[in-house]
Amino acid sequence: MFDLDKWQEIFSTIKKNKLRTILTGFSVAWGIFMLIILLGSGYGLENGVSKEFVGDAVNYISINSGVTSEAYKGMKPGRRIQFKNDDKVLLHGLKNVDESVTRKVIRNISTISYKNQFGSFQVFSVSPHNQDYEAIIMMKGRSLNDNDEKEVRKVVTIGRLVEEALFKNEEPIGKYINLGGGLFKVVGVFDDPGSDRDLTRVYIPASTGQRIYGLGEDVGNIVLLLGNSNTRQSIETVELIKKTLGEKHKFNPEDRRAVFIFNGIENYQRLMSLFAGIRVFIWVIGIGTIISGIVGVSNIMTIVVKERTKEIGIRKALGATPWSIISMVLQEAVFITAFAGYLGLVSGVLLLESISKAIPPETPYFSQPEVNIQVALAATLILILSGVVAGYFPARRAASVHPVVALRDE
Image 1 (cartoon, rainbow, N blue to C red):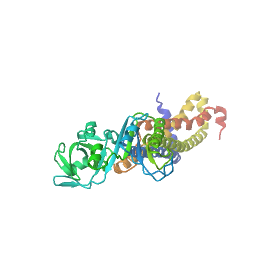
Image 2 (cartoon, rainbow, N blue to C red):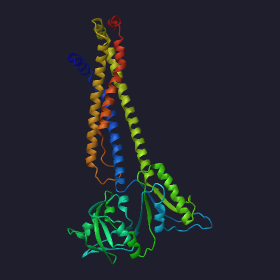
Image 3 (cartoon, rainbow, N blue to C red):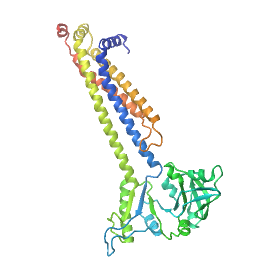
Image 4 (cartoon, one colour):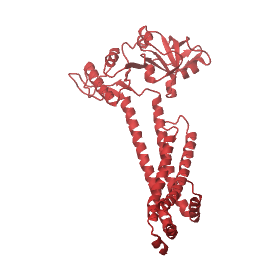
């Protein structure tokens, strides 16, 4: 029940010692302020790095060919490994693999044109399901499919920026663009949540690229999509890839230069583990700073109890219960801690909001520093508990004061 007289006493005590209370409260406010800033910055870093992954799937393994650096089974070092179509088929059959994609940049196309509009864009010959790896979103038309691949169709999907450059306000679907002398029908326009560079790409079927541009059976890199596989399964698949390709192309599976394998799942999980560690570290630092503030409040409350020893003795002589003495000291400690902490919390959130608005959206690896509602609730709980801890020991000392001894206190 709200006790007006008790709160008047608390405010009276604070009013008599303004500077002492403000300086003590500042240490608590600073601790919460720093905790909020550190947590918000940590989330900003995590948001920024996560944004870099938006443009691609994370459940993939990318394989690029290299040059052997070791002699193996009678084969000399220095051999360049060239992937073929059958390598994709071979790797597609490995355990944990859901889909496989081949990709190769067509480098002998310098200009792409439509009517009198020209542009220089990257052209990739890709197999179906490339859109699953790139996580692209079709804005118009459709993506490349199995029939395009089987029938070696001269069709193309283009990025949003390619459409804007070549077609202006004209509808592109069904129109033909010139890719280095060959006419390709536009069947789709895509958006990509990744960088603008991804929006300047042009995709054609892998079979079409091989036939028209003289690539034979050659493919560039191979990407394997692993569905819901975990980190352990992805690592097992990497070992299978090394062994399988090593047997086929006759190189030592442990030869690090023969093939270059990027495990997207392992890399993503490593980053998430790193961020989890950073969050724990920030909480430890922040709580450590708050504890220093709690110690300050506790010291102040000890002094308050000492100053009011005679008054407490009179209260107890008149029949005040130990709990009423304890609650009086605890309420003052919780009030100072919670009020100062709340000022620190609000100041931290306002500063993060200002920083978030000032940082350009395209800033790499740092985006939208913020503190979510769970953190705010946790900080509030910490403030209340801090006040209780800060006032508990002085309150116990006040409750143990003997009336006779207190009345003799000078």
